[in-house]
Length: 262
Length: 306
Image (cartoon, rainbow over all chains, first blue to last red; front, top):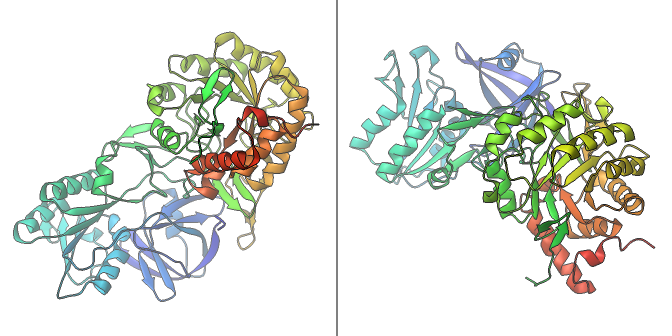
């Protein structure tokens, strides 16, 4: 294995919301839901992204326009190239024959999209069901509107679906139904609350964590979270592992290596 | 597993085995140092600390190739004050912890050593040999006998801890520089830092991959050069040598010890064999010693010399 980016041509671009575009490539990646790739723009920078679509020989990454790097990606056109290396990290472990809930906050939904696709494919409908919760600040920020069978929406301002947070909505659902497993990705404060809630209800839970990633293959130590390397030991961690990670929900490490409070 | 004794005494520091986590790999937090110790390292080195915090170079900063790794991280670190807070109660790590200290001038080295003096580090390592960070190491002229003598002397005045001076494999007169360090009061030489810098170009984009374009070469490609440096140093200096460069197996470690190293550093091996490379290397050393009739690391040090 050689950890170097290979250049991939953008073959399609799809707008998911005013701030989010999905860029498609013809690439053969051996990708498992929950893993990530490093996306490189020569002479600019390189950042981690999840694969949000896998369709035959097509893969897609969904990118929220947020800073210099994501702005540069958004300015790319069909036919332009981006460097891609990976996939990296440990993906989700699926619990197919059960009722599961997939909880995505903001662009965190992108990290869960291929998981939902996979679960819908493998879950025996007589034995289990997949419920998706997507939370956003406002209706315009909702992505993958028509993509999933059973997706419940919530927005902070009430412009779409349930008015409130994903955690409120999950709490609400748990009054009526039982989940054996929850998968989640989003802002870490939200993840922390989802994990707390799952702990109270005795539900298995897996979380996709985000940290500043440099190498992606476990040598530089930049993405440490309480002794766990998010890039290779994660980015998916289960509730038992998270209970031993004191920094989860509290501390993150910047690109200098300084600790900052969430 | 066998009962072979792998312990070594390095400048008065007792190590249960000769493997040391090299600086720049996984040494960002105390939690990771502890994890490396639990995976069998005899000692660990923190990622280098400067006076002020540094973001380092942009990504990509670390890539690999057929024969090793290329990196230009650019000494990202949170600065001495934050580092002093991060590395408290170092006895929790379970093995000796070495502080790697960098500076753009000798006064900086002194300030960082001072700033870390309240923490329980077992030794100070000063790399005067980074090939890819402007203002530091080779790019600041620290790889000359005079600069090495001056910086080592300045650090010697402010600490009683053992001082390890880390040298570049690039410089033909590595022995002259090592002697300058020895004369200035260094307790050991760490040989070697990454070589080069080298460059890897992506031909489709027609651009170097690393954002800094050039980076230090480590791993398999470095090993024969590191072994030769250690072999030459063993004849030239009296203080012990920590051999670093491309070690990822027990055989590599023994080769380096036979060249003259009293202990060995592992960095890129964490990539090629995983975080438990330290335990694997120790088991392989033990097995080889058992099969070949050696009963101590010390008895193998310098065995390749006439």
